Length: 234
View 1: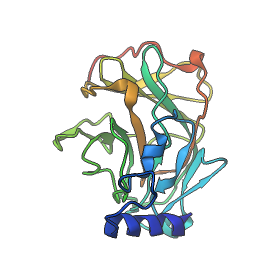
View 2: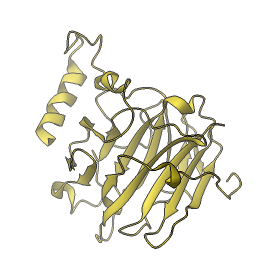
View 3: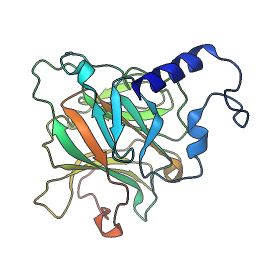
View 4: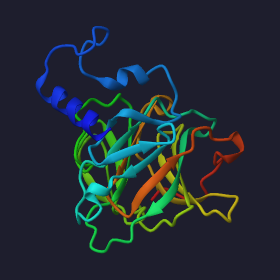
């Protein structure tokens, strides 16, 4: 998988002609327009990301386990985020948390209203430009302005925790946590992001922090979708 991703990144950087006859440019996520999110994309992930379990599990590779600042750990969801009455929602479950000390990277969540082009960025800090990104106590939108939001830090989650991301029908982004012993959600972040089209959003994830392995919940039961946030805008 790492070799395949590397080859595709090189093609995307240097090839100016269609790689596949049915695609006008090298936008590998065009094929995901007609489907909804049930797995990570088998091609659109960084060199240090490995996929397993039907592409529903993403892990940071052992090759960068000892690196204090891990790059190339971005992975994209395959398809648009499923839409429910409160908004577009997806859920990931934390499988493994790194105990390495001195990690300088972070766990980041990205939301895009456009399909994501290759090559993927090393980190979601500044790219893709068409994204709303949360993590490491910071948020940014497509305007590239970075704002401090201390509650937008997801590196204190434990193994077994679930992390839900909701793009509300009004365009806000909420990140919620659920412990294994809990039945409800605890809203960690309620950001009035102003996402214009919640019904057509794509998910990105960066595993450069303490979360080293996560599972995308392929089919979220309707009863598990948060109906209210219980938290004002941060």
